[in-house]
Image (cartoon, rainbow, N blue to C red):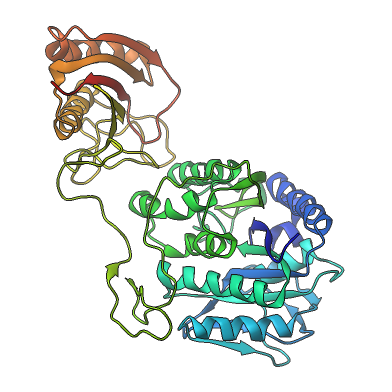
Length: 467
């Protein structure tokens, strides 16, 4: 196999699977997932394990561990009660120096660290202890800059790929990160561990769905939508995916495997492997700017080469269009409707038909739910107004239809999803009749367990477009 990233891994960094796996069933499952991933890593006979750890924060640029044999006893600063972790690792200083030089050529600020006693972070210690306990493969660790944006992180990943090629090394790239990373702020009993909120769990599972399908680049770019939806805005969640996608080629041609997923102290912990495969999804659903050289100013891309100091030319994130639009592929954007909660457009035109994605009652301005949400956080169901929600769904549907050049009277088929058929059907049906009585659309109404946001009703619609 040629040089480069031959496999990617995503692993959690909290110490519980290493030091306290027997205290919680989920922690033990993650421990076993690490062990299964270890067998997969060793079977591909890599030259190096390259670790990007979100638990090693740096402030000025990026640091790369270059000591050939770091040795110490580590105690986690938060979970010191779990015990100490003595370690002695085998590093690859040649790769570290080469990585540092490659990063600088791409205009990043980078330096190596190589002195006895430099603290290796908990995440890197846990990953190496569980994936490489006998030091069978040398390693290299790079920090995660707390202020770096997507452009800077992508360039850092590309510098790693440069080094792999120049040194002709076959590398397993490992990111150490939680999915959702909100820990409980008070100590809990191991038996009480759970994902901190339903919204966190929802997005964790969406990301894992992408990764299980081998859609690494889509997962990396999905961060734009996640950042709008999650309750705690922390860009640290996305950096590992930006870096890993850049290291491995920024595409979706992988065989993905989710070994397991469980909470660790409230955060979402998963062990995932990605192996390059010609049978992957391939095409990307997103098309963010692709930056080659860091421009020196965060949130800005620089399209110039290393010898060209021309100014940055494009903003980092392409926001949704400010006006209604339909692209050449028929994809419809409707700013007057609520933003999608996943990797899909509001609608898509195919010939003379318009296929509208599921439409709920969320307010486009602030994501509030008319009639009230069906629950708050992870609490039990609460009272809500199904008629108010249904009216809001129809208003949002009208906005999407208008953006596509259609209208409510051109709807030909409606699928309705209700989370409580017995409670809600009559109220929904009454409001539906007020708007659709003379439309003549076919309709199917389904009872389902839940919807992705705390709403009670959603419409899926097909409408006519064109003359």
